[in-house]
Picture 1 (tube, rainbow over the protein chains, first blue to last red):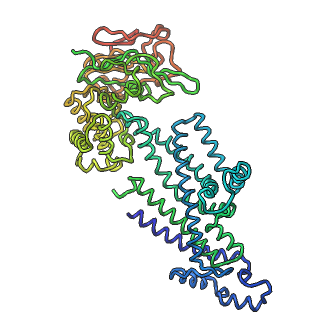
Picture 2: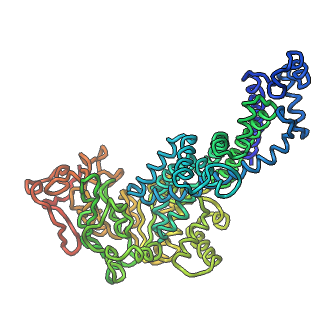
Picture 3: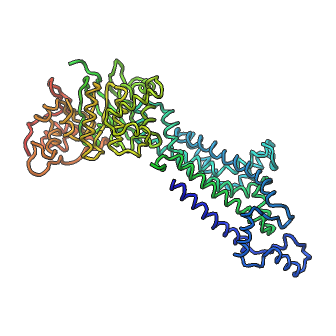
Length: 305
Length: 326
């Protein structure tokens, strides 16, 4: 329980620090927020008034506390560009992002773990070589490039799948696969090495000496042990997916949080940009916290004796 | 004496790595009789463990393979049977205890889970019956507080307790044969005697024949009925414990006995056998022990001695001499 408590405290500290970082980073990036809302013909005096209304002339720390105060009381604010309610954007686009992200996250493990096990059981064979080569490719190809390649192949040349759009299952396939690619490749490698490491353990010999079948020894015992590193790094996979979603959503025209965030940053829409940056941070940190919980649940040696 | 329960004939195990082929077990033959303890002794790397693993088909395939010989048990040759049949034998008819109890239990499952899984693999009984059987076995090896231990994970137990669990696991199904590979070596000296005592007590109570692998001649003298001495993959001398300790004939056996501290054969500084066991790929053409032997003849360098039995003792030596007190 102490482990759990300390993990939770860490999570809160990281959230506080990153909220400050996000807030400052957007303001330090330069550019004029008034351009988002006011027409190009607006006078400097108009712009100054606008800044004053938004509180942009206050010291940054003061802006931060005002903002966080409102945020914590449930007032997410409005977009500078079209005055849309940010809470409404969160629900709509968040739902789309969740569909894409959860699908990709599930694919990482549904594809990665079986392939990793297959590679370890067929160590140093054609299967192992083939799977590991694909894994190297999966890690080496940047996913924007993979996205473009897959659109070219499956949408343009073969015409099997739509190149973009939302939110039919068919339209989900390509972006989810591209988003999952690197995580899957890493999971394959990790599963394989964790399986091989545990296959060499003394206790494997004990189980065999007890007459258990290879399927039982590998499928139950070795896999159960190999799951620990896989789960403990699941948090990193969440972070990866959240980060890559920005690019993948834009390329596939998937109307999720990533797309909203990219547009907001390009337009200097401060309230939108900083809120959705924070959302991404929360998701990454929460993902890591969940992975810590999973690690705890998976490893009896960490539980309270 | 009744016929042997296990009969090993010319067992040869070969390891192939990177194109090199070498024999780690060379034509080993021995019999194990009902209810006896046969000690298998020798230095590290002499092939004791590989012999044991070859008996129950647990050698690391495909690099290692039994190429010759037979292991006759219960009317079948264990070298020839399928892996599926072998799995029925392992853990039920022949079981094994390993050297390091700290790493020999799966850390992810409770003691009770591990024991009942093996029981239910071999017996069609309910989970609660299996738990009762496991608990009974843990009580018999005098594991303190067995009910609690059943629900604990291996890391919550000490090395000695874990080895008790291993003994319980190996004996709970009343096997015919127990192979104990250095069962006390990894334990604290204070715990070694207790574990050995439990092991032999259980062996007697359950009428199990035991192959006791050890490098510790003290352990062999204390518990074994007969002893086989292995050197470089082959048996060089085999006799009853009384015969072997009172009148060792092979120069290697004599060397081992002289190397014992506080031995009655030893005076002054502790004796050592010069040199070391040759790696299996570089073995001398004649007697395998000849490069380290103080009484080697020319013949010993040229010709490989056979294991010759005089009815009471098996010996592989051209020039046996009575033991001199060095």
